[in-house]
Image (tube, helix red, strand yellow):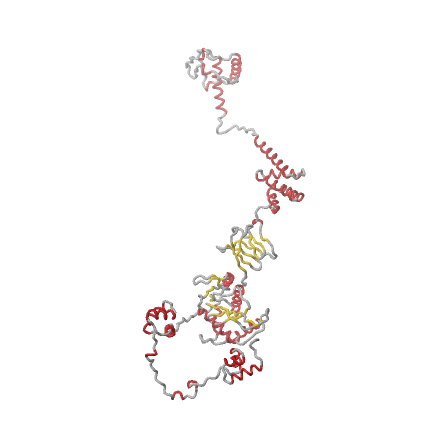
Length: 598
């Protein structure tokens, strides 16, 4: 090193120092820097020179015999020249102005004739304040713990081989002052959370609150009202039922207990010690806590730390049965295929919108996807073990025939077993071409009934047909044949009795009555009186006579059809004369035209 002197140079320096030469003179003679001269002089005990003993340092006790001089009054000329302008200077100081600005205005406005140092001394005296009073904080057992980082003892780094100071993590229970200490080389969000978990298990329980500084491992965005915590740290505390209470920015007094614990560890346990490995330092800290720190009597409480910890331990929350599952959290963008990329693998994020951002939590064996605004769980996937892996379900994919063979088989099975057998044969024998023909068979289900398709596929299998067009023609023929059978009207079924059908007796009386009238009209001459029998006067042989009369009438009409405008058809009336009968005019008894088809 450049500041290491040889032996003869060191002797020359020490000789000149003993000769009462100043460091500047030695530097000019020997060409050695004054800092190096001071270093070797201090090492030899020659610097700084011993001060003569004063009366206050003499321990003979004769100082009490010396009469004390009365306090002298400050002469008038020793007072500050700024006192006449005291009120104005105080007003300017309240505005935040410094001593130089006040001095310049004193010269410009009041003709101040003294130097700047006079104003500087006066302003410095006005800035002195009374000591600030602090509140004495008291907490219940198990209510609060305080955490912070410090610096450990020099330890040889495993990578560089040089001695470095690792980071010292300390968690102190506020009631009993019992502490957990551990050193680590590096710190991260996960390491910070794991150190808390180790401390909880060391104490055998959890406090209600944890007070921490606004370091990035714990607090992402400091805020007086709603600080934003690191997601991993917040999830770990929620798992153990602990609430984080970050201290205000630039307010270390809020966590003064852990600050004192770090200082006590550095000054007592680690001062002047060096370690070869960091595990040895952690083991020493653990032994020192058990043997010395926990058995000490605390200066504020005047009680032993271990005794108070035994009182506090029953009030700590119980530890959960399972440890916290650590994860990495990040933000990813959903690409146009509905997937996100996580560590060179791809995971489906649907139903998240395309090109939207989602929150991803990466566990050891799982990947969870959350909505960014609502923090609701969208999807959960098994973590891919190889780069380039794709985790998607069939429902996440859009329609692509090259990947839909299994779904086609499922659709064919819904139609029927023969349809599925035909589709299997098409794909097995023809491959891609058979798959397209299989789609043609399945498309028939949009317009035709499944039984017809099943029957047509059975016929195709029997005839060794492998064409979707032929199957379509068979379905159409079967459907046409079925529709033709449906169009044929079945003969009606005749019934003898119904609410709308009269009884046979009513039809018999009606027939006998009107048939007799027709017979009488044919045999009667114009102007004759016809007497019809009443319903009760019909003879038993009336039906036989009636049939003979009807036959005679039909022959007469066919041989001599009545001509329109017959003289006997107009104005001929049959007067009623006899009782029990009906007298009708001839025109009313004539049969209607075309009754017999003529």
